[in-house]
Image (tube, rainbow, N blue to C red; front, side, top):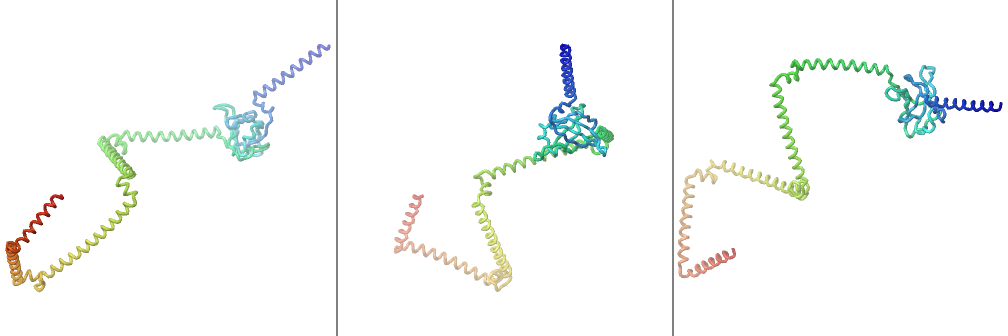
Length: 335
């Protein structure tokens, strides 16, 4: 009897352990193993959860942080999603974090994705309601895709019309494709543009070289730009040139006035210049005076020649000639 009781107890314990293992396995496979861990319950209110079910996972930064505990409607018809966040992940999830409905992979199960949150905000607490981002539903995606298809069809039709006109030689581009003369002119214009670009490049290189020379120390251009002493001298020279030009202008004005005075007195017989030009007696007297001067000069030369040959002064002139010859020899030796 005791053996039967022992056997029944062992069987009962075995069945209990088997059931416990089965329940744990079911909870683990169903994603509910978090119920066995310490967690915090928070909520989020969605307009549409797109097939989300209790037991689906909650992800934050690509890491699973909890599971969905319950899904229910509120009085306004919105969906309240109760989430269990493991306590070890609470410090990383802030009160201003956002929640949205996503999917695990391309066609995987629906999940809740938490993101955002500022580092300065406090961590979540039990009963907090997180802000949500409206999920793009399948209907919205299909409507957008259909609208894009219509736009693509319109673009294709327009492109077909444009390509037909180009093929028929309509418009500027069509003429360019069909008219060989226009194409040649365009080629010549492009060649001119390339030549202009090359000239502009050479000009730019020349300016760059000149700028480099301005920065080279010791050159005249650099001295003109950087040396304040040279610049001050150039400024002084410029002022002197300006003063000289003013003086030249004054001289020219004086010459102009003198010329004007001479022109006025040319026909005046009482003026000296007029008398010389118009009074014959004065002209004859002036000629006679010049002839007398020439005669006097000739006689003076003859007298000087006679004096040099006079025996009283001959020694003096010889001595003077010797001194002059000596000075010329000394000058030639010094050279």
